[in-house]
Length: 220
Image 1: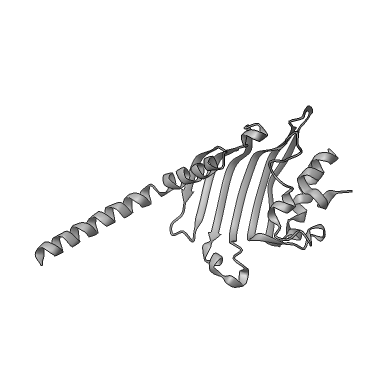
Image 2: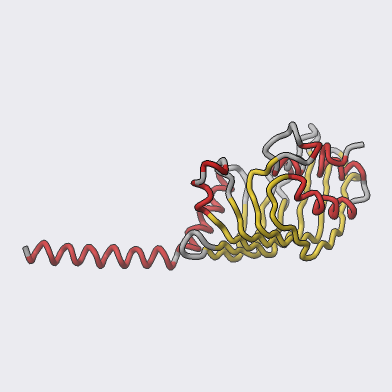
């Protein structure tokens, strides 16, 4: 009996040590997993800092994040994020009445640069922004489409936008957006993001690029 007790106690200590070790290295493990997921898709990513709050129904913070384009889009950096902070509510994922839409109590994102690339065949590395976040295309033109997520408070900054057409180097464009700390609250459908889209559109004077960014919202 004492033998079993001693080994059970040793096993408990071992599990405790392993648990503490995993907790202390959770950020490094999460960073490795995220980068590996991108690489499995043929892309590359670099994350300078990643901190995951505890318990999981908490926060995620990252900085110095770079996501690279697929080789077919040139392989250059697609997205540079200087600062990202998300206050999550993971319990909402289990709420069937919300149709599994995750809720973020607070999101702060500072984009240093986004690089939109179009191939010779006309493929783009990102569909239009409204199509990327809206759940339905039927109501898209009226801004009434629900989103894949909901946000209580969004603080958004965006420094630069680039556009490259791989079939014509002369179609390269670089736009300084200089949007700093723009705030939108209680975001549940596309129309709630329209003021932010309008602010970005006011900085983009090239109509072709505007249509590639926002599709039907800014056509015509």
